[in-house]
Length: 303
Image (cartoon, rainbow, N blue to C red):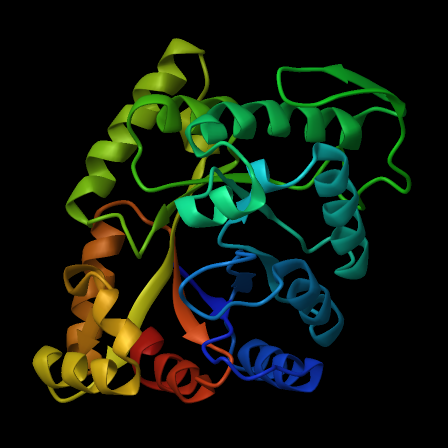
């Protein structure tokens, strides 16, 4: 079991590179596996410009895996994506993992003039185009949403032939399962939206899709990301304190949050492990280094 951080702004105040750098260095020193940045241009909760924050993380760390939880492909042109990720892979000296998602906040798509109901098809097409840009010297692509001729992204990613591709989805059924089987080196389930009891069934759907295309599902990793955690003497007191910190916290799905004392948090982690998750990423604001310290000192050693 690996443990990582899903890093978000957590505050409406401007966040400096020094603050992100300090959090990253502390996280690395505590022994976490990676840091993944949440990705939105516009949302009802404060958020970073994800690629800018990831660049700071690359420079601030030497060992941590760097990535996203998760990056919304339909909101960008594939050439932009290919260039951004190739650069981040260079900045991190080959420690970058991609994590691609359809996106879920309809108002964000509407504000940017991007069709929300087409986002799944746009994700599929975008991944195919980006892979070609990473792996080929020169690429021409003709799709329903993006087309270009004789484009070369240089320099290429440090990792060959490309970085690992994780596919993020709330569930593992239907097209999301087929997408993981087709493209994914890993599956990111959502700690904000995926109930624990759906993880096993979701994985069963992914395995069935792998069988259809003759792929070994053992080659696909599994992570539960953006997991809300808050400490207290009991789940009830932890939830009450969590709400006091921000009214928007009341919008979280309480049943998905890990709440309570260290032993109760460990029980929730054990349930995730038993459901097949190989990595858990805790959703923390840049001002919540105290939680990372408690997790490293009092929770992870028990697991």
